[in-house]
Length: 487
Image (cartoon, rainbow, N blue to C red):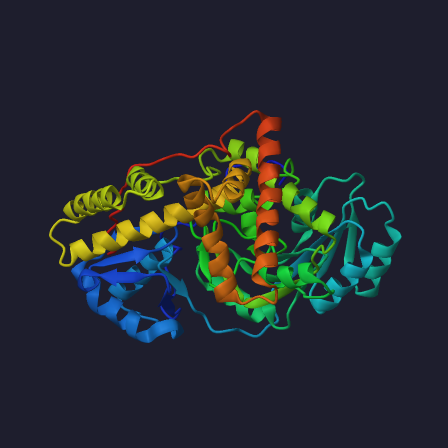
């Protein structure tokens, strides 16, 4: 597994058919247009034309709502497969009680007290603890022995990727659950996650990792709603360019046979989870995120350690960019959307409206004779403008943080700086309003900006060290319409 680019195995078309009794439900971000002949949404977001024969089956899916529908007809199964592959629908299998054929692999480096709590949370399962050459191995040995876990020790510190690979090689079950030594899955976690593997395309399933909320202070309250490992409350298909581009391997359930071909890249001390998920996606496998299952994680609550960890996460950017060219670009704004935003920032709403109208007309033309194409085109253009504004604001807070801080400092004096500050701060304000964290708005915004600057400084440091500007440079694009019939 130490050779990360070893040829992998991908799910074949025949074996990838969805089981007839597996219900699927439309994703909450999927919208239907033109009488059900067009769907928007997915992972990544796209526009999909649907055949007329799919109409009744799509209507039935829509009526079923979040509980889902198992349509056993040939057209219904084909439609479900297409929608699931696009990320426009999700399997909704019922929980299945164990026992489950799973081996838990725990990479560990010191922190024996945390390991004790993790071992207690996974009691009853076969467990392999991989000690990555801790300075004092005895506390880890005692903890593993007390819980009947197998302990393996590296003779030199090789990093979490190597520790996971070592444990996976020793597992004798069809599935491996990677659980970090500071994570504690909730009771019944496998009962919910395992049924997702009924879809033969699923290689891995991740639960929601949340801060355990322990400890006093504003940083603990902030972590409870903004943990770097928390991917949110909405389930998703995880792949490059999607709303959810990766999941952390703090807790991740994986098919063992996949790991025999697609291991973790041991050259990466950070970012190995991103690389692993992206290589799985490149082979056609699905990685699913199911936030119904929660895993408690012990956060770092000392401000210096908290900021340093965010900085370290950012330092993985350049190495990942070398392995996955084009995927670490901080922003991919449409040229049309840039024109609209530039006009608005300069205080010229009429030219901005003209640019948006022109983009809408061109898109409507590409949609051909679809009913309601003008409304659909206007909605796509409006969504794109807002999305690109948010992406630029995000980049100004992170990858372009020196420019972003300068805009905040000069926000009241220059029109463009005010526009940039609004793009940076509006999403943070929306987060606070919708999430209602136990942190006042000012301190929430300050911590949010500090988190982004810490991460962005890590990206800058990695770009300088690798002499690669790809993680810092935007890549403007021309608008395109993806048209993929679902049969």
